Length: 498
Image 1 (cartoon, rainbow, N blue to C red):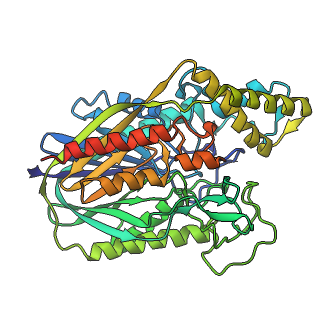
Image 2 (spheres, helix red, strand yellow; image 1 turned 90 degrees about the horizontal axis):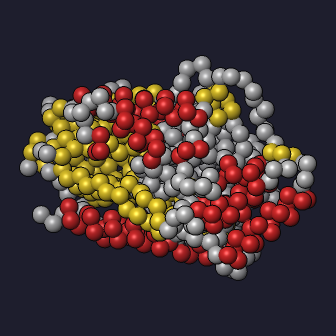
Image 3 (cartoon, rainbow, N blue to C red; image 1 turned 180 degrees about the horizontal axis):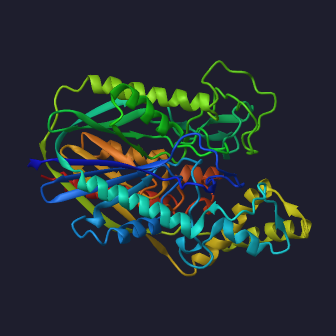
């Protein structure tokens, strides 16, 4: 065993004097209003011969191309193990877009961006008809984020000093299943549970919060790592920049524990989870642009505040903050001499495929839509509906070129604690399988990490269908999910053989 070293840093991810196009919905939200800053929090840990640098970003996702750009910017620092850098997202829908067309694989893999190619005679309604030259997007945004993340990684590495850590555990109701199942076998994200045909929610939820507290050599608390099975998307429909509940958790903890405290929020497997109770449905405080959210004469429930608004965001943050403080009170011992093992590898997963019949049906639907709307302007709801079928056609083209696609995965051991990453919005059941069979005393699962390959649904979700389980929702299907679980457990067991 060796003495553990930790180094922390934080950098702002918002450009000055720019308008941004917020990511995460089917319609444009261009804004320069900032509700809460977005940042990257970096944690470098080194022990013995191994190391890891976590970079948690207040973004909707982090592409593998962004990770590679970060590593390229670290080339001037050969002392930094760039291959040990791990970049993840909290999945906030109120942060800027940065995707480029080159960030996908193969012809026909562009998803939404290909819709206008498929419907050349149909115009798309731009809800925010902004034509200024100060919009932050594309190559500029990609390079800006890569530079800031690299700067944070360098600062964290340079700040590392001998210290100690303690594990903790909390429990808070933050994430809940958002897929509703009906008596005909169908399912729907944001489905209405007040219907007589409602049967059950498709999956459970995970209220557990895995925690690590880091300390300096003199036992001063320096940071908190918190793993929550819920994307940070309370405010996902709003038109301002925000780090959602994680930014508020950070502020609340700093008020209690000091302004120098660092907070690394990690999103666990939560592709089918959300901050909203689908049974005790509480309406948004003001209208939002999402047809799946609309309810007719909903019953007013005595439950949470609106989990579409700041009131709900603050409530969720308080729950997490309170559990972190309770867990901190229970810390009696810290660990300074430990082991760190870090394995990174490329895993080829089978591409989720479509049949010829599915391809022909999608062509028929799109053709009928194009004929009915020739010369017309379509809105975001039309775009969302056609996205399903455009994705099916794109996948048919892509599967002629590729049978598998590569993902980058990391597994780590820190003493008796494990970390495992994946680049998906991974459905909860997969995470439960990994965590339940892991040899570690605690297992931190990090989704949307070192890549962004869409949702990874279960077989049950694929059969129920709807958004998040469509072919167009992600590159992998349940066979890929099962392979990811088996490989992750194999690698964790190797790390814990000693």
